[in-house]
Every structure is written in C-alpha cells, then in structure tokens.
Image (cartoon, rainbow, N blue to C red; front, side, top):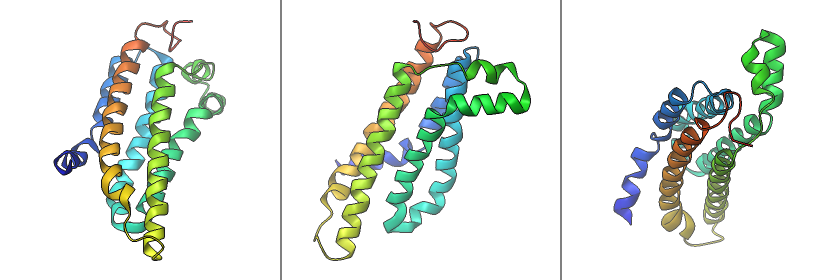
Length: 178
C-alpha cells in the first residue's frame, strides 16, 4: 500500500485541471459554471497554501480541515453571494446564479469534502494525542489517511467529470432536470 501512497503526490494537483476542463466543457450552463468557479477558487487557495502548510507538521491537518470547511461556505451561501454580486455588478449571470439549487453531483462533491474533513480531523486529534504522550502510535494517520485521501481525490475528479456530463443534459439555466 505504500506504493499507492506515492501516487497521492500526483493526485494532490489532479482535481484543478479536471475542474478547469469541466468548467470549459459546461460553460453555457450557468449553474455548473457558478459552482465550478467557486470550486476552482477554493482549490486554488488550497494549492497555493499547500506549499506553506505542509511544513507545519502538527497543525497541517487542522489547516486541511479548515480548507475543506472553506468550500462549504461558498457552496451553501452561493445564492446569497451571487445575489450580492448581482447588486454590485448588475450582471445577469449573477441574477440567474442566485436562483439555482443543488444537484446530486454537487452533493457528492460536498460529501467527499466532508469525508476528507473528518479524516483530517481524526488525524489532527491523533497527532495531538501522540504529541502529548497519550497514545504511542498514530495508526489512522500512518495506515489509513494517505490511501483514503488518494481515493477521495480520485472520487472528486470522477464526481467533477460526472457533474460536467450531467450539467450538459440540463436546461441552459438549470444544473439538473426537474
């Protein structure tokens, strides 16, 4: 399984090109475009901060929890964000984006981020317990986390591709058929 963990380094950067590809392919769909723009923005913040936060050792996992949580705010409040941007820019795109609802693929992406957030939270607690000599070995971080993150990155890429395929089936201003 250690050889599998080596691929995690490559898959750390894989979601961004796939998100950009999905954004390009479903540009005409306002809901997909708005959701993917928010997703790409958070992913860019994550990738930029990765070079600094990876050196934090103990608190890196707390930062990973925060970045996963950071995606939830624009996802849950995207209608309000779009409405505020519409008020400031008077752009029809933001008005239409403020009327959209969640799709199954968006929920799957949120579930993947939630799973990652929980896994990093467990690792953070485990490392703190190890640091203060409460436990002797941090099993979850050593044997589960890297492989889990690899699979979550793969599932995230597949969910983004599925989102792109299904968004092209909907109407111009919808992200799913209703």
